[in-house]
Image 1 (tube, rainbow, N blue to C red):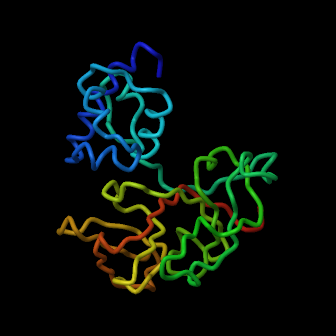
Image 2: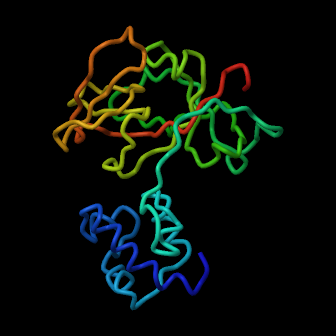
Length: 231
């Protein structure tokens, strides 16, 4: 985003906020302490800093082309997971060089444990997934053939849980009101805006699970996968 375009970003952020039906506090509160500063930014009286704009873009997965030009979709759509092949320099020695691989069994997690607080075995430097938060192993067959047991998924936390790509796979962690469940499922829209439908991709695991959105503690989009023998 070049400097002379930044003065136009505020009004376009306002369009996005109104499109999402959010107040100033709801939209900017998770990112900045002083949300009142955004009122003159949205009205075009002040320009927005590069760092702050980048944080908002990443938080809401915004389309930078829309912010630059006012044209196109406001929000980016994630690509469906694809089998990826690693390149040279796949393993890395520090977090600056890659994404942590957490060798954990997701079924062991419950309550208020944060997956991202687990100690990594090592870091993986694979450019297509370097914007992710973690690599995690898949256990079980409920998501076969989309994800087979033994494969590794690359996940990125969804910070705004009302922006979901229906029909895509997510890693969901719930609170005690939903039995502290942690699972990988396809998500589908429910007639009630306060609920979502979770569904396995394996036809042998029939039946939908309806989940209250308020019960979701953590939500991660699954950007892609690799196989275990490539690590």
